[in-house]
Length: 517
Ligand SMILES: *[C@@H]1O[C@H](CO)[C@@H](O)[C@H](O)[C@H]1NC(C)=O
Ligand SMILES: *[C@@H]1O[C@H](CO)[C@@H](O)[C@H](O)[C@H]1NC(C)=O
Ligand SMILES: *[C@@H]1O[C@H](CO)[C@@H](O)[C@H](O)[C@H]1NC(C)=O
Ligand SMILES: *[C@@H]1O[C@H](CO)[C@@H](O)[C@H](O)[C@H]1NC(C)=O
Ligand SMILES: *[C@@H]1O[C@H](CO)[C@@H](O)[C@H](O)[C@H]1NC(C)=O
Image (cartoon, rainbow, N blue to C red; front, side):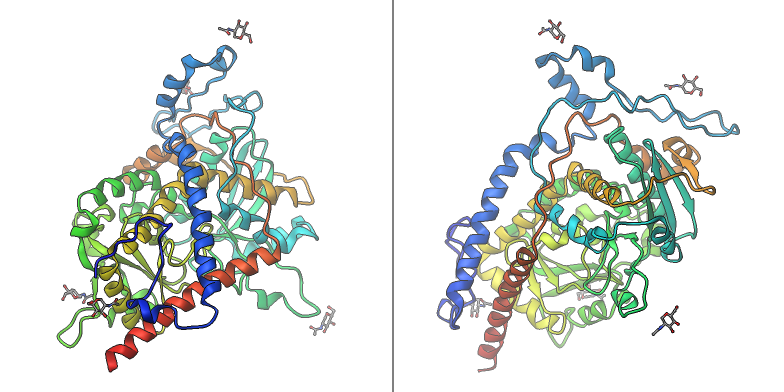
């Protein structure tokens, strides 16, 4: 059964038999939703395409960009203001000093207006809603201390950090490094602020601990993910700047490696099964997934490979490169202990991603639409759902490819590093607005800068820092923040995603009923 419809216009995400596809009432609404969603996203994608290519790699290739664009403008004044950051490490043995020579106030971008940020920025206000009316007092911040690995304060463009506990690996190091890069990119534009940061897997500010008549208001704590039962403020995770322990490069470098890697095998020529590689012991869901692997008794169209990090580390990670993992038509995303950083690498492959229903969200995942960016899989029916999804995809190759492409586009465009920094910028700015006091440097906090962080490092940590270092301030403004979601927006968004998901589940159930006959 070949697939003939092309593009989104003719996209009818239909079941394996057309006649069995729309058996229920309420499908008109569903079709409406789907086509509205697709038209909407097509418009966004076209709009984004026009702009996005000028943005991609702007940060890394900034000096090249400058050389190209400078002669065409009257930049006499700005030319003198152009700043090139360097890493100026002092002689080994002498104490490392921060360079304090960069002007922070005089810097002006080349343009006076900017384009609108992607939709996922609209969740920023939602994540801060808890503290909107009361504001945030210093006492509230300090109550977050038991949950935090570090406190970070920005005063007049400089960052000060007080460390409380050592988290797993170098999560805190690369998170702080990322914030330093933001300060460089938007030199003098990040407001004074004071925040607590948690680097664990699971959310820590649980709603249920702050309910009832007598309780305090919840402390605001930044973290990489949250779920419906928690109030952690979501922030990009450390892997955008690098994950030294497992040899993962900064996101910008990883993305271009994956883009090259995925060109090696055309979608049609990829293995027509669903691929997952990782550490299966991290969650119940992953153990369930393991049961779907090919065996003598069954073939659920799933191919699972256990990632033994210790072994890979000894072998120099030669056999676990993310850019070499775009070999299958379908890739499975499943959470570990909480959200998993693997999501963006999996989605970037151009394969159709099968997402096992997640419990947690990170800063961008709430804008992903089922059947457009990925195929939803029930967590209590993984093997059956994946078997059906893969068979469906192999019967409807155009549609499956389109879903894979849309997911990858989302990673390339919405998650372009400029957008990641812009998200951090807007989140911190909105957060700073609701602070009710003027942040000051805590007595035990230390000034941190690129030199204090990178000069004493060596090996891969230093290499990743050099790779992800912002070399020059942005000559573009941050994108402009779209209006926040009203409650009814969020409700209809969730309802739409749920409707689509339920429709896919119905197809799966129908398929399995037919199999039994
Ligand atoms: C795929 O196509 C085959 C052959 O037409 C059919 O028997 C099977 O039910 C289809 N499966 C799905 C999930 O579409
Ligand atoms: C550039 O701007 C300066 C001052 O803003 C002006 O004096 C000069 O004539 C301009 N040069 C060109 C080539 O437009
Ligand atoms: C680096 O630091 C040294 C001493 O602190 C200083 O003399 C030198 O000019 C600095 N170099 C740059 C490129 O800033
Ligand atoms: C509420 O707080 C008051 C004063 O701190 C205390 O006496 C009382 O036992 C608390 N009530 C509950 C239900 O915790
Ligand atoms: C899953 O099955 C494949 C193919 O038989 C095998 O190579 C692989 O080792 C299995 N994975 C695990 C985790 O057992």
